[in-house]
Image (cartoon, rainbow, N blue to C red; front, side, top):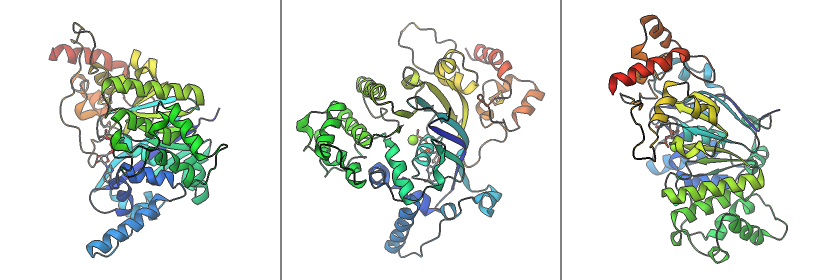
Length: 396
Ligand SMILES: Nc1ncnc2c1ncn2[C@@H]1O[C@H](COP(=O)(O)OP(=O)(O)OP(=O)(O)O)[C@@H](O)[C@H]1O
Ligand code: SF4
Ligand SMILES: [Mg+2]
């Protein structure tokens, strides 16, 4: 069966500084502008970004520059990538799939490339290389009307509900915006559909004419979810939708997303820092580090028998609810996260891997070579458990 979403070898490299106004502008524009782009779906982000760059150039009296990343669809042959210098490898050869009605949890530390992956999937950014297929169709090939149709099927919920809503727009208008932008007149009219969506996400009818500042964080996120649902999408990319909320409100929003999935069959790509957030929610987990997937698999396998040292370290750091829980097996990662502009050669986790120091020279040599695509991006999965036990015992 073809998965709903198939991502293969997806790569996004950013110039280290200032070199690509066309790619950078949508990011710096913030969630509110991104939300507007999603509501005005035929827009090609690269073209709007190019206009932004021209506007910026106008205000700063500079000559507008061309964008090497967006003007070259296959820049692998270009001198920019051949040199491999001065590039932030935000996403570097990422592959995964999401089945209809399922949830993939994408987790990893700050800066590992989760949001960039989400924005690539929304076509808010153009990939440097790789393929994204929705229902078997390559999305890089979509132009205006195809992109408009794509944005009906794929929507996004942002991390910060406050900054993704326009403070001067009523909640009813914010939820109606995608319908109006797409020219969709639902049976019963736009207002009735909006009221229906508000009811669906637990907002009251009298909230319709209120403004975002009159709502709590959790309520604002419900508005963001209703807006994402307006076009009956097949897939919603949830970029840390609960990390700005209190723990009790987090649980309510996750329950709401689960109920919606059960009722509508929508699939989620659920981005989170924290493995515990996705544990009871995701069908599959992909663990990301420095722009790459370290381990992916069914949730019960990743939690029950994690294979990669990084997954093990993340899991061992999940806070235990019981005050007397045994914390002796905690794996502490040492050293700073390397720069994505200069990742370690071979296995990118090598410089922080607690098992590496316990390996013999010939095994370490292998760690310095690139790990091929596989479910667990480690050369030594069979040795790691035992070496990690030694490493943990040494630090306890
Ligand atoms: N437009 C851009 N230009 C240059 N570098 C960028 C741009 N967008 C992201 N990056 C860099 O790419 C890397 C991945 O960023 P990204 O926002 O995807 O991380 P993340 O995993 O979502 O982090 P967080 O958990 O903090 O949200 C980071 O090093 C970031 O600085
Ligand atoms: S390949 Fe080597 S350095 Fe990388 S995760 Fe495995 S053991 Fe650690
Ligand atoms: Mg992010």
